[in-house]
Length: 113
Length: 112
Image 1: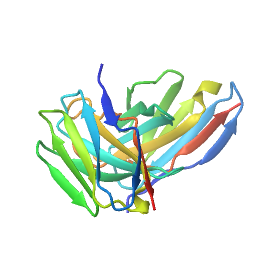
Image 2 (image 1 turned 30 degrees about the vertical axis):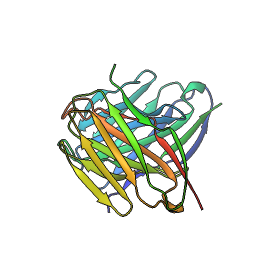
Image 3 (image 1 turned 135 degrees about the horizontal axis):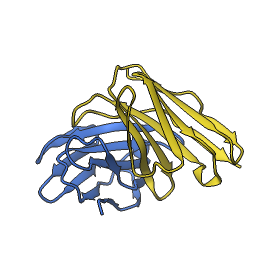
């Protein structure tokens, strides 16, 4: 079974703190993604990566950065957390190639106070 | 603006009934994905539709794709309570970009 593991399920952080969300996949997938999910807005793509050290901006990259130093690991960084970044964050991965199934992690619920 | 629109957004139905969820999209993608999400949980892949006319079935769910109409349907046959969940469709902005756009989801509640 494919496993996409997000290290933190629930986090509470203060405004201005630096936040790291970690994601690891065990299927040697080339593609990895970070989405945020908000009620009524569905899933919105923050960043994705198609190879080690490669990244592309999604629809809402402002306030976020990412790091992919190893193929299996994709980190999302909130440089200075703000309350409007309170959300559920979903990591996903897939093989390169159109039409491949995208596998999602369990999600990280982040509250910024 | 590239859009993926699902309707209905909310659906409450009796067990044993049939219903269809619609997914309209505006991209040129010829791939479409359906996902299920249970409350507080992550997304689970249901179907990947790879070409015009593709039809896939799993249990009481059947998905189809019409790329000319830019429409996919998820048909539920003889609904049971276990199908209660939120269903999302998603498409690629254009083939091979991996920048998937998700619909806002259809929240399905099956009443016993």
